[in-house]
Length: 365
Ligand SMILES: [Mg+2]
Image 1 (cartoon, rainbow, N blue to C red):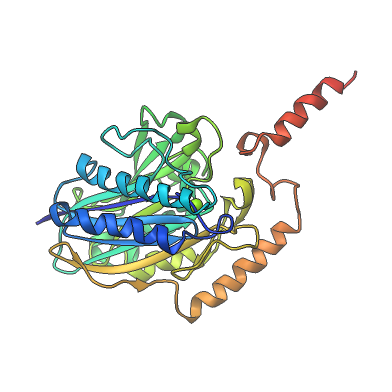
Image 2 (image 1 turned 180 degrees about the horizontal axis):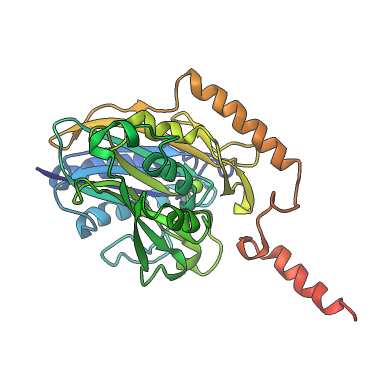
């Protein structure tokens, strides 16, 4: 049976600044999804990561299905009304268009979707990030699907020894969707050359080479800046990963987040800070909104999802969080000086740029 998983998320308002959605807002979104699920969905989960609400849906309607996207869009519109009525911060922030046009792509919400023939033991990992950008997935997914130092299965497990195909998008051309497909391990250096530039080149999907129709990964690739033409908040990407057997094991994917690597994001989307793996129901941090990633593991049978395992809620990750805190403070101690603050063309508030333009005129020979 072919199942589609659609993961659609948006920031439509949060309590007391950029923290987390209110209970009333969450319940509004959940109730709408529950109500509409009867005709359209097999199963669903509604949860949040920092200030973003995510809707995970299993169904049989394929990717980019109009009715599925409209379900999520309508839930976010209803939620936005509640957010406004409660005076929540950033109410409707990711709702960038006035009316639904058949697909939430390019309208603000982030979307990751994957269609597959369900395996006997289908293992799904869902990663949701807040206060960062889609390129934040580049390094962990390079490690997990191309580097045997991080994913020993690439040497040990015959079904994944052939490696994986990376589909990478150039986000400068988001509307025309320019992508390239490169194979690991043969094209490893080409892949590395692209993935190092996290603000431009982003992994869109990863595919098995042993079983070329089997998709391992789907990442949301929204660039809100391109849609709105102005700063509207960080993209806060999400990803769906299939694990085990013909893919890396759950721990070979999850382990790649232990580096807490530096990513763009944080307060005002203008700093480089470590990506901290957090437990479920963690609000965004008031230590400058450090970028966060949340992970859930689920099993699926006939599209029905089990309860989730909170991937970063066990003692090992407390140490990683401590390490991420130290890395965060070390970089933060550098204040506004690069690379602590991102370069001028990535600044998402106009203040510095305007100030520099004024100063430009005062320079003399
Ligand atoms: Mg957010």
